[in-house]
Length: 262
Image (cartoon, rainbow, N blue to C red; front, side, top):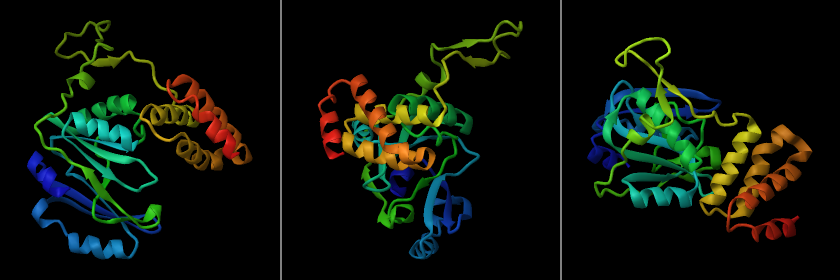
């Protein structure tokens, strides 16, 4: 993982461990060669989770996406130089997508927001400086499973961020009379439904469109919604899945499988 970043030109990193019950310990703006990996290993043995990101304060040719379905992550890696990190067999993948040009943190945030909508990634992990798990360490949130690199192609196929940063859905604000050099962009795209059910609906549709097993999507949706909906979680998950299957072509027959389980 670190070698792929080095080849991409990522020279400085922030390393962090999350100690229970939620205390974060940082090592910031370090050269790759000086990362305290031995210290991180000792912390991980004692059930601290290990995270990493390109150091803040620099422009990097890299954007991060969280909780991407494995089939979708594989599709991205077939098209672009993108490192796919499996955080757990039951969870989604991290994608570190290489870009044609370096992006400042604000631009990375805009690119991540745009990409997350396209591939149903986690909309809450688009800050431009989000941490990802470091491969080779255990994920204690998921019971101590290993974090692994699934794919890290290096074919010279980098993503052009212009589609995200300067789309036709954005227009210049000219009603203030400002000249183009000082005018600001405004986003005319409709905002996605930010409610819990709206986010879950988008996630379910994205998982099905990526080819994920409906039964796994159903089980994970119940787990996510149970704290909010209580005893109604199973009915809610069943209805949400049925509607999503109706909307996404090629998945209709799977409804019978989920119903049969119940």
